[in-house]
Length: 211
Ligand code: GAR
Image 1 (cartoon, rainbow, N blue to C red):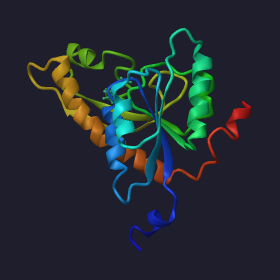
Image 2 (tube, protein in one colour; image 1 turned 135 degrees about the vertical axis):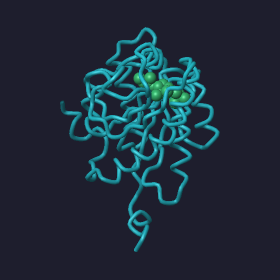
Image 3 (cartoon, rainbow, N blue to C red; image 1 turned 120 degrees about the vertical axis):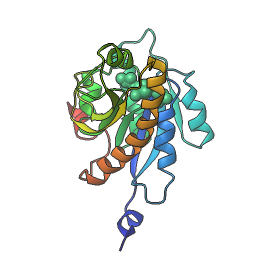
Image 4 (tube, rainbow, N blue to C red; image 1 turned 45 degrees about the vertical axis):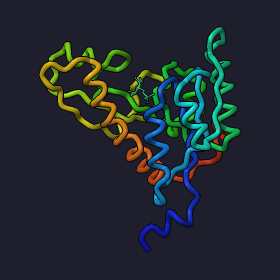
């Protein structure tokens, strides 16, 4: 019964965390509109109330939440985000340009259930300025990776990547724009595969909150 399993099972509930433009969030969202997509987005949350992607999410009928992190302790802000994510019923978190380091407490609460997209071929170029670094190194290819989030920055198991050829005369901006096209292909595909393969998880915040 092709497709039958998906129609009878609830879709995995995803909270997407953004800090800005939100184009990867949009790619995840529009992929979720397909009838056979195994996930749905239940919340788009941000550490920046001005994040552009929040407007798009709201216009598309997705609940949004934003709380500025400025002046707050990391653990306190993360706890706020966690509470909203849990309230939304999310089972997984997808970081999509969330440009804020997360506390180990938050990461541990979502261990094995939080993915991130990073604009490099990990383990190369963790952190910022990935395109500049790939160009400066004279690499033939850049790319993007989706990985499981662990407490160490951009360090968790890589679930998929797409290589993007570097062209003569590429600038960081030109390369970033091409890598972004690849990101939009990669993230929905990897997230769909991840939630399909994952064993059913208890609701967010139940077992790991004791930690
Ligand atoms: C994307 O290129 C994403 O890979 C990157 O930020 C951009 C967000 O764009 N993320 C990181 O660098 C995380 N270390 P978007 O808001 O349009 O999705």
